[in-house]
Length: 260
Image (tube, rainbow, N blue to C red):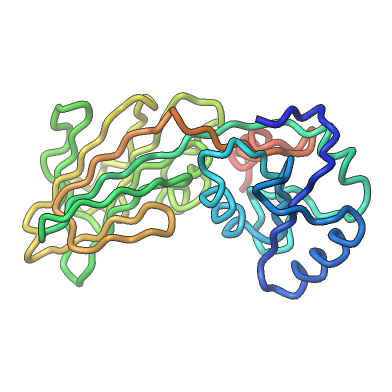
């Protein structure tokens, strides 16, 4: 992993197709150069949270740090945008290391698929029929039947995204926890969520899959007509993000809990 006290001589810039991001790409490339991502000391992503997730996925296994600057809409995972003092900002940045979730999904035709999720793994109904899902944690059935629009399991980094919209808990970035949250639960109505250790292995079994088909989504990768899904953190993969001091991901997640 690159030392954050390094010189950052080789910077790779990536950007969305949005005009603001492309303008920033041209200005920054002219000022700092633009190395190939595979040769870079750091990748600077210019866009929104979608680009940050895409860049993280593209660099899984490289341990290459990624520093985002917001040229998108929400930009929760991004730093503020400025043209100047980029090298100094990189040298002073705070490093956050994340671990993704690994999803293994089995479809009705017997095929198996795997995918990694940095934010969350979601199970979603495919038709007008509510899904029926059995949930087991570490081999023990904890929810015999959840009738719902879906259910998701979120990392701390993803806890302020879809999980929060589904009324799930916000997790501190360094918490060794995962959030398990139903999406529009019909039965049991009063179940809101559960906090699991980050070592938990969660299995979702789809009940009545022919009548109530369900898809599984790991961040942006979707598999349809699944019959069971297993999810666990992959602690062997490090994803390295960099944030300006005083505006770290930990600070942002803490601040999000006090918004009204």
